[in-house]
Length: 427
Ligand code: KE4
Image (cartoon, rainbow, N blue to C red):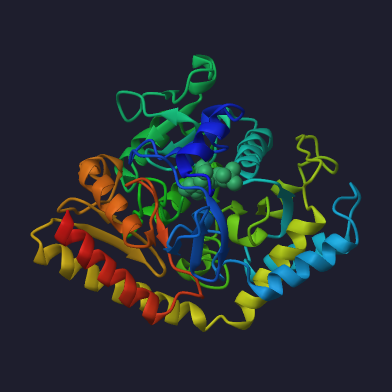
């Protein structure tokens, strides 16, 4: 008898906190019992009962080639035969670093980690160590992993220092982070006027993916670069999602803005645990062992993650023109979905950039967190469950991004639009 998702979730809940190893997988914001995955291939994912879905979550971004790409699996198996971890430098780490440094000019030195959280946490510590300053700025709705200094909610006014975004974060620490509205250069100017020479770093998702997809408005990132450069403040681009997502390189390559530090993750690990921090040589070399800012990791640069990551990046490099066709497919999907929603009198604002998109259930526009929060999350939840019923696996939250992979086809898009049509009829 195949266990139901209820059975699996109940068993998990007896031994795993909340039954999941990352909160978003528990489906709290859309309700219902989370579906357990069994395996996946290309654009498809299969649940533990064997039901097939077209996957637009793609493990929250890493699976840009589609699941279980044969060349990635082959590289992984080959590496595994030679052992899984050595705790000593390997040439594979140098190859990964070379691939990234030769592709993203702002990255002159890199340090591998095992998660995006570690990369962002290290970036903040490094910026503070390098500048000798303590304050950092982040933006409401941006997520940089769960390090204490970055799990911070906005204070009352735009120049009021932050408050803890979670119990367990001391006020004293939260008070060293200022969270500003995204796409509000005026707020940034006010904050810099007030705190300028105390600011160690500004960290930003150059395209936001964690309040749903929100694009930077014209001039916002350029203003960030100018103001931070004027103030000797380290500019950190968190490209954990956007790195290698839109083209072979960072979003920074497309807009011609060079941050001082960049966080990477997800895609560069090909689905294995990975993160990376890279940037200017003079800053990066302040990291131990050349410098005095400490950072370390037992499995940093792990041979398996390197093999899957290098295989993934090499395929992306050889198929750089596929980014355009992937983006075109996403454009067709979003345009046709918009027509279906309008046909049913449902207000939606679809933010899309290349193969990354969010359908906000509201009129829009959505250019920051306050706007995103106006969405009808109840309607999103019903849409999510309807699409799941019709074989489409979407993000279990209105405030996440959807992704297409290189394995998604026009037929997948047609099936998704059929499912959308059916779902809206029943909604
Ligand atoms: P990880 O520690 O989860 O590898 O990376 C943290 C992180 C850092 N920066 C950005 C821009 C990110 O999006 C993330 C993690 N993304 C979330 C979902 N958007 C991961 C999913 C989860 O938390 O389970």
